[in-house]
Image (cartoon, rainbow, N blue to C red; front, side, top):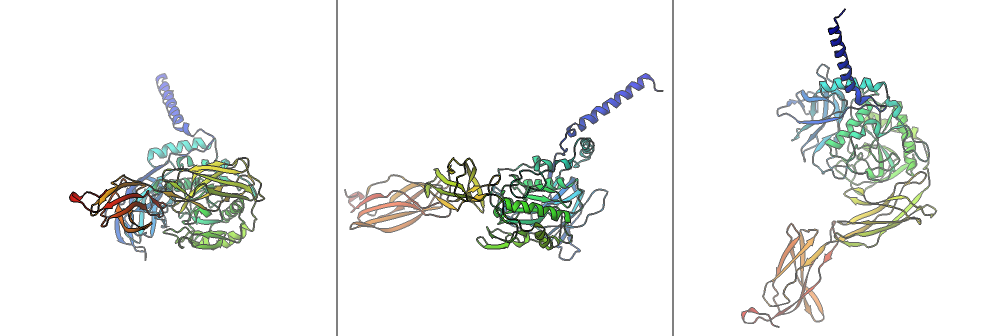
Length: 596
């Protein structure tokens, strides 16, 4: 028997332990699955880290084993702008474990596939899910400058303290929730019912929010990808793999969101990828040059020599059988895609391609994706998809601008109509005004149709734009896109008042300003001959950073002149010209005064 004092001490200690465990477990006591707070970190590849030539033929150079500052679940490499894209492979291990197999990582496009991504800012590999790892070793076919290793931990195991807390919280959460109960169909409409899809909220997308609202395009075909990570992840880890990829795409690559529209694991579970709605034509970052015309489905794993599971193929078939008809497309036959170009695109901008409705990334991109084994399974996947006709009611949208040109800084009305194929108007439907910015169509205004299906919006273009109206569809109503129309932006040209009369041989100074700033403007001098003016000289005048300019000319003969400034049209702006200013040039008198 313990003395009373000892008993009280033990009871107090037990109570303290229970309270501490309760405090640690509290965040996980929810019906929703508990998720650790993700951690991103990176390190510069240490100087002298390369051992030299790799033993594997064609592998180039290999690094020393490097211990990361924290435990990680996913790793990828980046390197300096303008460097060659190297072939990359990595392997990893924990402190006490054996090295994994080498995983090959393909390089991602140098020019960012998302709006706002700085083109060519850094080269980057695809990220690789590695489970739990403390050490990494890499092989490269080239030695790029500025090499950096980028890590993500999404499982709450970055430090020993994190691992202890996570173990307690997972046990506590397991008693009140199950991720399997969160897999659900979201936003199903028309045709076949949508397959069961794990929504973004169930794989932790709250920790990977989009930077801006998604863009909407079209879905004419489905691209099949693989994510190039080890295939031995567990069913429970799969959602963490998705979150890790999203964090890498968003935070390391600087993209808007995860690049893929959907992801499928080896167990046949489908995950919602890029935000915007599974039944919407959300523009992803998955097939450079074709993102606005397709949806992208990524298979978690590497399928260069390992075939994808029957469960995953069946899941992709269900998804494609639903997804393409929702957007008014059949699931079989061919689709015509138009290349928008890009550094990793096999085809130049403007090339029209007739391709299968279900295609591999390598069909248009300079890549081995989705791996040799999975690519060989695409005929089987197409057979499983079958021939499903488009579902829903066809719609038609037309658009135009009130004026073909607008002054810089001005606004222009955009008008249009939305109807069903028979001509009946569609009221109270959301429509986007989209502008072609770079190689991407981006929403620049939104409107809702009136009772007669009319569309009205105001835009403020800052440069020449190709425009279109995009209806995303709703319920049984299919999506539709208007023919392209355009608006030009006229620069604002101001010409300061100057002298109205001078003697011949006198230097005349011309001042003014152009907005937006152009590198040069053209100064035009004309002389009256009979009843008409003819051009006697043109001069290119450089502008300052604020758009101001100063030009001069010296009239050699007496007579009536006029002069003005022209900003030539280019890809950014339309042509613009100032008013024409008159000048009387007389014979020289004493002191150089002009004749009256």
